[in-house]
Length: 270
Image 1 (cartoon, one colour):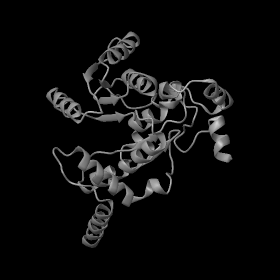
Image 2 (spheres, rainbow, N blue to C red):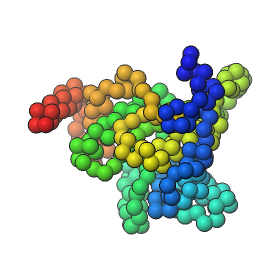
Image 3 (cartoon, helix red, strand yellow):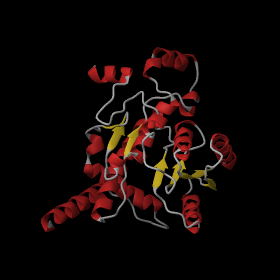
């Protein structure tokens, strides 16, 4: 009950921000982003578009990958109308095609630009499962990067509930009534983009990795979302799915046992 009340009134958490903070507010005092290149998927509308707009306003160079190039060009034009000096590159990318992903990577590398921020807005409609997968994947990637001693951090955010295109596709009387009754719980798009912009730019989080953020503050995940064995199984399955010409069959039990053996071996060496 207390957390719900804090959410409704927008009480600030430890970060100084809360559920009512906007993307512009949380980036007002961020460092200059003119040396930063950010790839933002899903930036043609909704939360992604607002994130792109605000980061561009703070000086970041944007790379907007999209399957629909016209939609991406329209998004670029909207940002340029507000910020004529914005540096925005539109590139083709279909995330449902591994060939398209590989081509995008090759084309981006040919630009000889740094990659400082990669912000991926999940487009899937299978909300609960996709969000759990994102949390697990984030924790596994963060762990592997630590083991590699890579200077890369990875975190995931929950933007909150906002009426974007994903919810509008389910419009109808029942949906409209539900949104009317819960309108006080819904965020505006600028509020929904705040946590992403906060995590991407705030200097206090420069070394934060493997974390989950909500309402611009670090939050706890579900028990399943903190399960390292499930995270390892998901990673193994993902590796098999993206391998070129792989005929391997994913065995979740074997992958989990292998992960435990590697983890125990690493602990003994330490």
